[in-house]
Image (cartoon, rainbow, N blue to C red; front, side):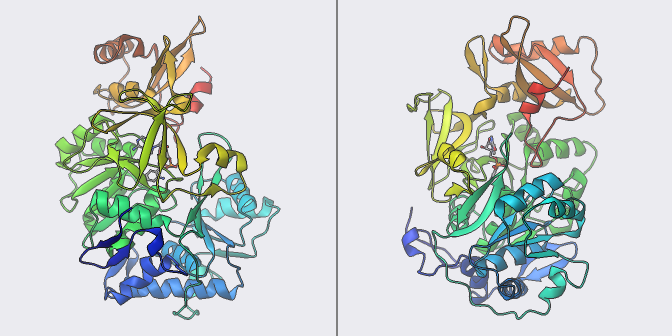
Length: 528
Ligand code: 3UK
């Protein structure tokens, strides 16, 4: 990686060697802004009010004092089931400053999931927004491990917010190290138990600099709005670390990101950068048929979490004049490592490597493949998680020395653009040829009657795998008798002949994870 990164704002070391001894990353994301004269600038905006950088730093220190006063030891875990709010910032950074490891988790989970995480992380503390009490409290009751400290974020005298007010607003950061454990994020693969990915102090610096500054071109005058929540690595970067890195402003939405709610936030707070996922862009496009929100503050849109179909890219551009830059990231990599850039973007591609990351595409024998040949994508970069917590098997399968197995199948073209083919375990072998479910889905949604599509392999009568499609119809469209034939003809005209779906299932919605990824494995086992 490069040496020093200088710009108008500050001097930010970007290599390991330049992280000073005792380095605690909170110094750079929080305290630096006071030294740089940004204390009066608004750091965080929500419908409940604005928070300046000075207030943010004070809240972080109060939280660090609160945690230190509870005798949390260095490395103790703080489980956070917290909605997008300024309290999320206080808790996350206050913990890091006090040497405690914050573990923000998905707020849409169920009691049994939280019970697993409480037990697995052996957390010393648990803080949750009152909205999630209905799942978190039963989880606490059923978990054999009891966190010593349990608080709601607000609502009673024993809550985090109430106690925060009584804590001093200065705190000297506990010395750490660029390589020391800093925070965890649970990665929930398509199946199996979630795995706690352990991230180090340097990791957020790397993602902010490599993807944020050098790929997206984030700046101090940017206002960031991430529809993806902060508990998701994608949202954590977009909605918290990137704005804090450049001294920008984060806009938060604490409820569900729908076309209405996201357009409302955009009109009210006028963000310059918008971060969404493909499902949301598809829903927003549908809403734009009738709604006319003012999106003029936005200079760039970003998509990740799933591949962005070229058709959505084109329609969004047509409708709003804005580019959506697709990029692939993961919880383990912390943020985006392959991305499109403005002016060099290719619809339907994930883009090219983000500076600072390397990639290889391998066959079954670990031999690197040539351009155009799809294989397993592995990547290398300074932000990747060092291990999964207490999971040596999954760690060994995923963290390959300095390399990280993504679990995705990709090919790279001659120009270095990467094309997503599917999760390695979702790839189909049809008529003996590897076939990408994503390619078929992207082709299906080019048909005006199709809003969303998911394709999986199913055995036909002869025991051979054939693609089948589950589709959500566009608003106002009915499945007519010759509908299947029409979609099959549409596919055959656009793809290699063996790739067309042999069967269609019309559904109201597709099974998805909380972060909007289609759960194809659930369709494979679904009963007729
Ligand atoms: C898939 C994509 C194609 C891919 C994430 C940006 O999604 C994020 O993290 P997760 O751990 O999932 C990782 C997996 O999701 N994926 C993500 N983005 C794309 N597939 N095109 C894309 N643009 O299977 C990957 O392995 O939930 C995204 C930043 C941080 C993230 N954690």
